[in-house]
Every structure is written in C-alpha cells, then in structure tokens.
Amino acid sequence: MVPPDKFAVEYQINPWMNGNIDTVDKVKAAQQWLATRDALIQAGADVIVLPSPPVGCPDAVFAANAGLIFKDMYINSKFKHEERQGEEDYFEEYFDAHDYDMLEFPDPNRTLSFEGAGDALFSADRKHLWFGYGWRSSGDYKFKLDEMFENTDVIVRPLKLVDPRWYHLDTAFCPLDTGELLWYPPAFDAHSQMVIESWYEGKDIKVSEEDALRFACNAVSVGKNIVIPHCSDDLFFNLMDRGYGVLTVDMSQFLRSGGACKCLTLEVVE
Image (tube, rainbow, N blue to C red; front, side, top):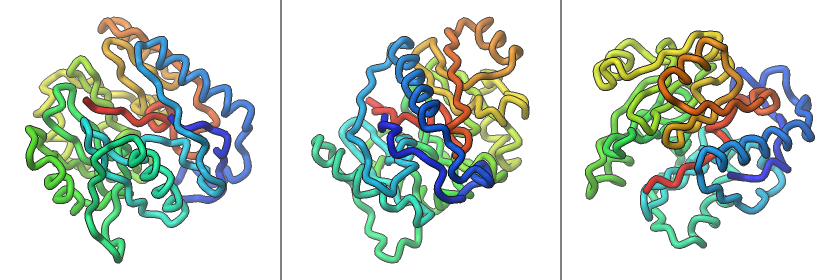
C-alpha cells in the first residue's frame, strides 16, 4: 500500500473524477485508508507500506496500478494518461531497490499502455492471468505479458471492457481465493462475458448495478475473507451465506477518484 498523504482529485481522467476536483476530505480519506489497512490485516494479509510518493502524484495511493508482480518478477506500468506517468519512476525505484527482476519492454514512443494489477488479475490457481483492456491498457500489451510468462505455466486471457465507468479490470472483476468470482457482467463485451461464464461454470457471483456503482467488485480476497466497500444487504448476506468473512469499509473519498479497496493494494503474487 502507498500512504494517502498526497491523495487528492486534481484532474479528470475517468468519469468518477468529473466534478470532484478539490472535494476530497483528506482527514476522512486518511481514516478510510487506515480502516482498509486494518481490515486487510484482520483478514490475514501481510501489509507493506511504501514510502510517501512524490508531490504531483495524487493517484499513487492506488497501488494496484504500480505494476505487476509474480514471484520475483516485476513489470512496471506504462500509464495511458500523462497525469499519472510521474508515478512510474517512484514505483520502479522502490521495486528495483527490493531485488525484483525488473522486466522492461522497449517502447520509446509510448505506443502501448499498461496499468499494472488494475488490469491484470490472477485466477486462484495462479495459472491464468485475466487481462483487461479497452480503456487504460492496450489490447496489444497481451503479447508483452505473454513474453513475461513464457517460461511459466501462466496463460494470459484477455477481456474487453466496454463501459468507461469500469475502466480498469479490478473495478468490475474480482477473482476470489476460493476459486469463485465476484463480477459485473455489463462492464464487458459479449465475447468476454461468454469466456468468463464458461471458465467459472456457475462459480461466479454477479453483482447488481447498485453494487457495481459502489465498486463492490473492487474488493480484496484474503483466503475466505473479503475486504469490500460498503455494499447492499443482498450482496453482504449472499457472501456470508457462502461462508465468507465480509469486512466492509467506507470508501466515499476514494470513490471520488474512481477507486476503492482493491485499487489501494498491490498483491505480491507468489
């Protein structure tokens, strides 16, 4: 996780930010960040907090977009929007200093973009990497990810996002550690919906539009526990009935920027 001290809405690069410039209550945001951290620890996660990001990186708090980690490999993000590109050196320097194998794909003209674990999520068995494209990450980045995983058992499976409100994969798609899936089908094109339905074969939990708009799919799975933004009673009790421990966190300030629980975390995938 990245400390929230620089967090603010200073520009508009997704629909959630519109009208929210300079509206973040920084005290509430800090409280919500701490509540998320504490809920993750309660759920059983080990939490590492990075150093404070540089000035001019208000979205660095959304650590999911820092890059992608798999075992000792790290691939840095290449942000689509100039407003976030200043985060790249901050994250790269941290992971380089912590002995990760830094993977680089030369692209001097920035023809492709990739926004890390916001758009790249592993299945529970770690053998499939779901790759979301359409708004932030370029579809052709799949071939770069194929290179990253060419000497592993991981298969990259692309999914196309079609609604700008769910601009990253992790805003509408949450693979759970149990092998189930929390997701919002209308965020995807018809082919991607078919692929997801076929893959999960009844192990998927579809959320309502009401819950999707609360970023219920932007949850963090830790074993049988789920750290999730406040959601409807229907979804809460559905998850409880399935045997999950459900820890809800108020994400009102981070939703102003289009992020929630999962956005605030980058998983170190072993």
